[in-house]
Image 1 (cartoon, rainbow, N blue to C red):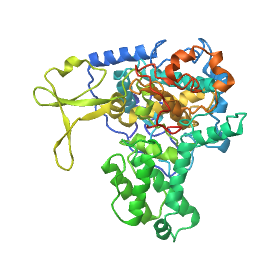
Image 2 (cartoon, rainbow, N blue to C red):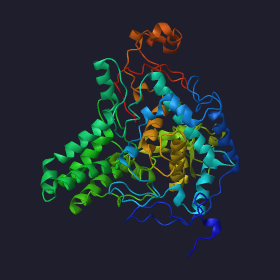
Image 3 (cartoon, helix red, strand yellow):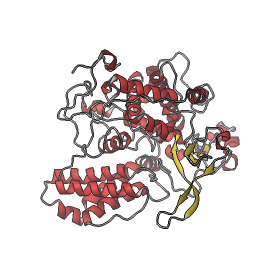
Image 4 (cartoon, rainbow, N blue to C red):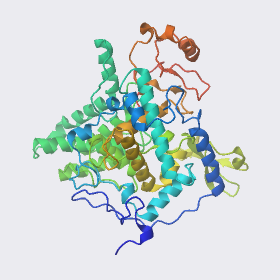
Length: 519
């Protein structure tokens, strides 16, 4: 049955699911979206916070020295900042096809519905959610694209000021360092720093592949299939155990450690030991590993619902192959400065109103809403006794993504592809080139701007150059005022107290260098 004209996709003018041309993969069917009524006064207030954030001098605006000159084209600014060196298009080098050209998908990269695959109703629902949570009322998708462009410009300028082409966050999904530092020791330190996260993931792959019982269980498989299966179950477990689990904490990597434990538990036929995260996700990772081992199949596309778990499914695919034709934007709270600038990243707190009904209170809301309310306290899961800690729920960005289901994820994926193309670091909007590199770099940059983080996390941008020995302190005496008591620590422009907080904390105190996203 042909789609009604008003339900065709507004980008393609075609029926839903007519854009992504993956051979042998069927996209989930469109959903009969039920319109949601948002509070217009609340939406207007949130849009006011958004306008304040993106205005010159706002929290999402680039700092002086980072801003693109008025009237300069995106592509020209990208060329000036060295965008092609920071974001080398390895997908193009491999000849990765366009999304809308028939192609065989990677068995470990789930094919997800793009903005161009949504029905008209789904697309408009995504726009309505963007509109309510702060984006421009008349054209929310253009507003989202503008914040993506603003973030990318800021990232490139930060790297240029730091004197490097890549950062730890940017290389989160792997790659090859291209920064050249005229000192072999500093170059080695830089390379180790920016590749630390991906190196730890590769170590996890090796740990699983070398597990004696994994080798015994997969002895009937050829070497290629066995290796692919080991990597697939590891990536799947990392994605499954990610929520509420820190990526790196001091010398440890809780997310990966829990993933390895869940895989080992499945291989050994036992329950998984709790390390970090959510118990249900730990069990999910173990069960999915057991299922994959029983089938001997490295494909993971059938694990997880692309509609209900758009972030987790995209994350798994990014770990498998960031350059795949079906690479899909990983949207999460870590990218809050892009998808919901101006809104707090702290969790909402749970209360009961005077009638006993539970509700969430967000940090951007007035305290007047709490009159007559009582906090809801967490309880010990084993004893049921009060823990003395107030219960929490979604942050604002998480709320926005939850309300928008997979539709806002799809619109954000499209906005990123548009920005990559306009900056000349992608072959065009129909390619998934660099979406994961851009997303990971935005994660790191946001840590330097979050009001609920005490320091601007330079460890997301490990600048290993000894700035003081190069005369930076004498060239920039004003830096001493910004660094306070830490002025003599040879810190570059990224190593500074977060201007959004009042606490001047030494970013390096008690932390091995560097700390990764998720700390």
